[in-house]
Amino acid sequence: MKKTTRELALELLLKIEKQGSYSHLLINETLKKYPLKREDKALLTELVYGTLQRTITLDYFLDPFLKKKPEDWVQMLLRLSVYQLEFLDKIPEHAVLHEAGEIAKRKGHAGITNFVNGVLRNLLREGVKNPDEIQDPVKKLAVRGSLPDFLARRWIDQFGVAQAEEIAAAFLIPPHQTVRANETETTRKALLSELQKEGIEAEPSPEIAEAIRIKHGSVADTAAFRNGKCSIQDESSMLVAYALELTDDLYVLDACAAPGGKTTHIAERMHGTGTVTALDIHRHKTKLIEQAASRLSLLNIRAHELDARKAGEEFDAASFDRVLVDAPCSGFGVLRRKPDIKYTKREEDILRLSKIQLDILDEVSQLVKENGILVYSTCTIDQEENRGVVTAFLEKHPEFEQLSVTVPETLRHLKTGDDLQVLPTDFGSDGFYVSSFKRRP
Image (cartoon, rainbow, N blue to C red; front, side, top):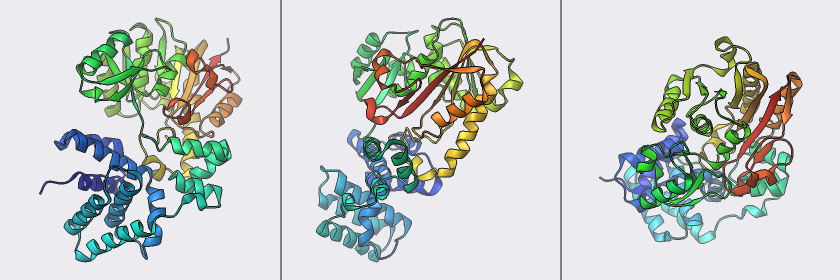
């Protein structure tokens, strides 16, 4: 029997929960495997991401109607159904109940079918609890923003209640896709025209000169993408190439480079000159960098399989004009795209990652030439991984001074100091952090 879109969504959600699979990769694989109609592809993506994004909220809604915790697949089916009932206006209630009943019937027995129908009908009749009635600000934020308690507490501590609520709400909004024009092959204007001719609805980014925001359509399926005219990259991630203050013919090290979005941007900003040495600890990831460089016709990239914490064993001291450490991090800035992160990461991971981040900076800093620039960036908004690591690095390395990070003119108003913390509330991008340092002569 052909699987319905909701059955596929349920399967994906269970794989993500049980196997720790990455949501974005699973969705992409499923969309390639099953010949779904355009509207069904959109619904599948909405159901998986939406249910994942709001899991804690959905469990809060369901809790009064469950005397005991049901089997995992039944709980997930209920979440999936309540997400549609509470957050998707265009799906009729009877359609949600019918489909939930049919799935329960196929996967379970009559008792489970009756249970699922009973829970959903009771919920519709009595309504769900209002999270705004929760008195404790941490618990209220956790439920409204569907955040683990530790993350809600950290955000309130670091940003205050009002801003934390705004950030949490922003992370529940589906992300828009942006692409970066490969300016060694085309211009933004020409790329925009080419994409529009291929049926892509797009507009220039008001923030980044080489970026285009996609309103509708799949860029990865276009000839422009296949032929190396562009790369898919969030606007916030493009900021590191500005922070590096690039000119032609530089030797640049990208210490944590895969899958290569920032590496290739650096190579493009140097107009194909100089050399960009790109490191990653895994061979299959350095292959991704090489594939990206080949697709974009960039000949100035060299990928190496190497742990950045051992870079000093491979390269001479003071051998690079620019070094980028786009460090492994908690990923709490990309929750729109990877909502599963907030359920798999633990608070102790932040401390563990901060140590790794500092270890990488310690190691690669010796490779920066005098008057050279070192840039540190993450895709998290947690201050311990960002300004905390920067402070610790500067205390250990008096040979470096913090620079006022270079960013596009359009984003200078976001700077509150020498570094830049981009929040999802700023211009609809991912959360991102960037700081830069200069090696004293």
